[in-house]
Length: 255
Image (tube, rainbow, N blue to C red; front, side):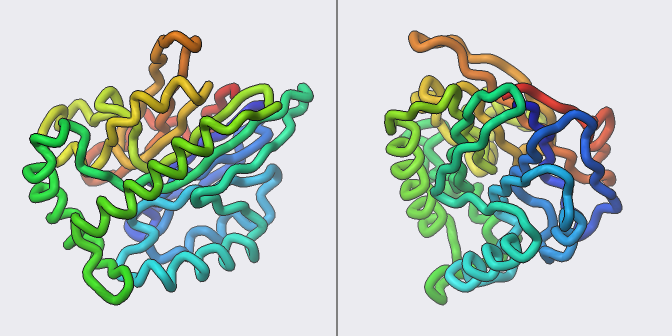
């Protein structure tokens, strides 16, 4: 199945018009499309089905318990499928059946191990202040983010381990699944644990892992006993930082 990938368009501040990629059979939106949700309207009537996994900025200034059902309703009205701790199967033009498993997979701050968790959470508190979200009426701070992240991980681990008769499995998360997905500008800084998780042990359960969040592009493979997993990020990022340089919004990959 041929997939077009878009993420981190940040249309709350960026001027960008998405276009359907020639030959794509499915569009994957891997989060941080527009913190206002307004730019989601650009995908109404899209010529191919859309799978959307929300990013952290889809919840800016919002109460998560209220935002989730509202975002789901918005997606349904636009004809796109929101995946949050959910799976679905789509069939490509070649007849191959692809299982997709999607979740935000918030950061659990364990990217550098338990010994560095507290330091990573302190660094992550900055990003939570920028996001200004709440959960159950309380500030969505690093400890609450970690709890949500661990719930996402438990679900994802279980979903990927489920037997399937699909021809391939694709994981979609907003946060990166490995330190390999770190933005090279920041590398092993503590703040990187707010962008990537240590989900390397889950990679063997997916043929392809799509993510966003890091504002750079990645396309690498991870060999393991079960074969090889391809990890792809096609994030656009912010013009003021030069991040969209070389960005190919019409890129299509095979699942």
